[in-house]
Image 1 (tube, helix red, strand yellow):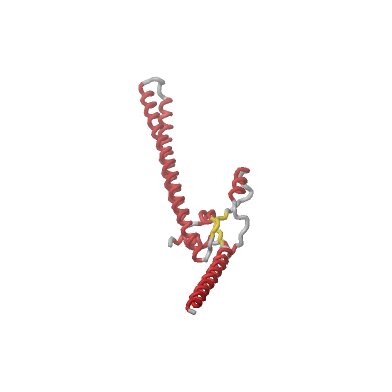
Image 2 (tube, one colour):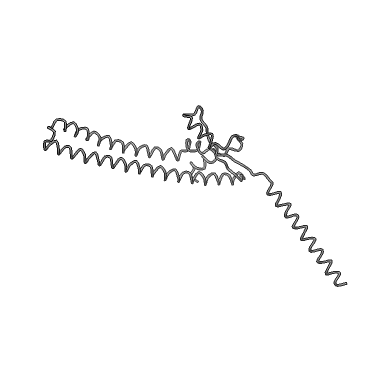
Length: 197
């Protein structure tokens, strides 16, 4: 009798284990099949409308204007030296002295131009990386808040295209062909980015 109870208990445990396993499989299958909640975001719109990005651009424009004024002044000095050289006899000591000064100042101006161009490129890259990382963070926060599983970047295509090359590039890179406006979280992301929370 005792052995029948053990066998029956073993069968019962096996049956319950099998039922639990099957229910787990069904539950896992349901969660694997349920559709993902999707959102879309326009990086172009964020960049064009971000107050944070606009403030940075104004700072960079002011710096670029300052550098341009410095270059214009140096270029004027070069023009004056060149004009002064034209009043001198070629080969004279004064002519050679002005020629040397002109060459030195021109070389310095070219070196500064190269340096400033590299410096500006580095600043733009650093800002773009920082801003894009911040945008990614904000997209993640807004997506979680709205219960979204995936957020896809959409392109803002402008027609007519500037060139055939630009049109082909747009066609190759544009992955979102249609979306419902209710899926667009761009304005929320933009507000979060500019609020700086």
